[in-house]
Structures are given as structure tokens and as C-alpha cells.
Amino acid sequence: MAGYRRFSVMLGSPGAGKDTQLELLEAHTSAQILYIGQTIRRAAETNTKIVQYLESGGLVPQEIITQLYQLKLQEYESTDWLISDGFPRSLEQAEWLNSILAQSFTKISDVVLLEVSKQQAIQRLQTRARHDDTNTIVAHRFETFYEQTGPVIDYYESVGLLKRVSGEGSVEQVHGRLCEALGVNQ
Ligand code: AMP
Image (cartoon, rainbow, N blue to C red):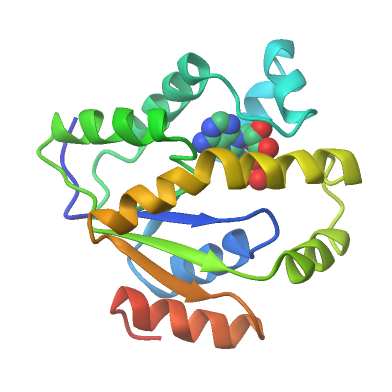
């Protein structure tokens, strides 16, 4: 696997606005985004085993997710700056990512946590119409975020990689903060 000049990770609760912000970032900078959520939803169209996890709001098991992620990484091999959206979401995934990146002498450059209140996040989720945005699934996705991704956030904070960015306010305001945190021009 070829190395990346810059490898970033984007974390945030469901409804934090990650996708919107990453699309903007991709349009305005040299960053390319690896959207693992989209990959999983596409894989679920032909793999019924995956559907049950999506429909529960829990994490897809390690063997499946790492296989999908690794295939995706190969697609982005010649990318200068890659941002990983929604991966890693558990400590097990974070460890796996470190080891896979180490094979190409790549280290994570920065991890951004897009923060919004739960109330705001739920409001945002209500305005879109994704299949897994029902109340029960959303509730479990939040639980999964706090329980499994919480320790990932603590870990990246402890190694000094975490940048907290407020996701409250308008899309443009958040974009401005994100650019500042990542050190890129708007
Ligand atoms: P997202 O589009 O990022 O909200 O993800 C939608 C769903 O995909 C989640 O509720 C999980 O079931 C699954 N998923 C996304 N990212 C991961 C991950 N890193 N590990 C396991 N499952 C994931």
C-alpha cells in the first residue's frame, strides 16, 4: 500500500453534519474522502448479513468492516490527503487502522471531532430521509457512538491528535471552523 502525505480521521455523532462538511471540504481542498457508511450501505444491497447491523444501528463486525475498508483504501492509494469518515468507530478498529497504516509508514495526522448537542443532531436527522433514521435505530446509533466511539475519542485525545470543532451554526460557519482546525484556506 502506498503512503499518504496526510491522513485524517473525521468523527462525530449521528447527525453531527459530517457528510455535508466533508463534501464541502472535498470541493474546496485537495482532500479526498473515504465514506465508509456509504460503502456499507452499498454492500448491504447484496449481503443480507450486513443489513441486520444497519437496521439495528450497531456496528458491523470487525472482519466485515476491515475487509470493506481495506478494499476502499486500495482505491485511494495514490491520494495525497485522505480523510476517513466514520472509521474507526471502536478501539479495535483504531488499533487495526494504526497497524494497516504502519505498513505504508503512514501515521494519522489529525482527528477531527465534529461536536453538536444531541438535540441539534436529532433535529438534523429528522430533516433527512435515510432508511436507518427511524427513532429506534437512531437511539441505538447514539448509544453505539457513546459506548464504542467514546473510547476512540479519548484515545486520540490522549495521543494529542484530537481537534474538537463545534458543528453548531450554519453550514458556512462550521466549514470555516473546520478549515481553520485543519489549517486549510476556505
Ligand atoms: P453512517 O452512514 O456513518 O451513519 O453509518 C451507517 C451505519 O453503518 C452505522 O449505523 C453502522 O451500522 C455502519 N457503520 C458505519 N461505520 C462503521 C464502522 N466504522 N464500523 C462498523 N459499522 C459501521
